[in-house]
Length: 441
Image: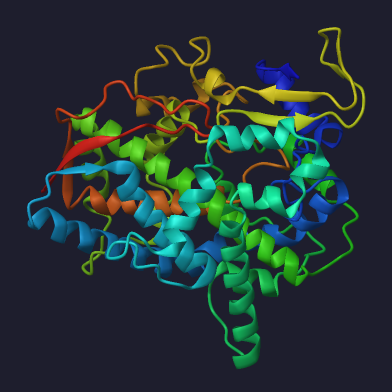
């Protein structure tokens, strides 16, 4: 494995020579039906068909679902605070919200996680995401003929993933039998069809969230998806993508909201700025328009700095599919070699971000954005294989932050860890405990 942290070389790997680094390293025992694990032309086909599901227009259609989840969350939190709760553990709190959002938008299903913390959606998702390190290591250490056996699947608790697959399969059959239509990801995937043209919209570029989208990136994107013939997903492919959206979207968004709220609790002035920016954008019904929310500069900068300081994915991995000379370094990456891009380290490099361990959203305000060097901000990756769910994650996070800032204030308490104490050995930026004080405005 070679670790690459130079921005120009990162662009070469993720964009200019994308085809040579189109795959993530193959892991034994992992399902390759999902976008995250699929390889070569199979990945190209999946991504080309699924991409239209995540355009801005499609997300607008789900805005009401997310807003309803947001209202349920705030109402429950209001009752708890009214009944004397004055401290919250943020990871658990935000996890309940994102669980409800994902279940509602992926499966049109309410989880009722607030009243029932033992809901199988919650318990089985947590089991999948918090696999003991020793179990994960077994996948690397044992021969593949053992890793792929039924006994090993039981050791890895794959019955938890089977729960989501079986649940989704039942939903599909029920909808077909009753001719039901819903406005969720499952329905969009059932209806998904590969477009012969460019499926991007003008509004998508406005919501690109500092992702590099210049000429080189557009060329790489066009070349990556050229020649896709298949138009539809199979049922197994639909099941796999729904499972991926659920697992990938649940904890990453919850941790981002948790860290953001944690920093608001430590920096009361930032809470005031968030409140001031959003106080005049709600209508008489207490709602905020989708297009208005997506263009608020401070709330975007707040989330950007959160994702810089606490990137959900600590590193990006790619596999060389052919021999490649790395820029003018004289280094040859040989076919089959893995390349690691250390996102957390890049985000905390003082050459890119002065005083990197200070939480400062002003880095990402419009007046300062030009100071950020391309390919030094990578919470969603970049190039044709970037995070497909970026806009959805940002939308659900922004809406909650805008609304929660008008109902509650957070503060530092005795049990607040400063700085954050992280869990070691995890693939994501996971804190041991994030406790803050809460009170009504």
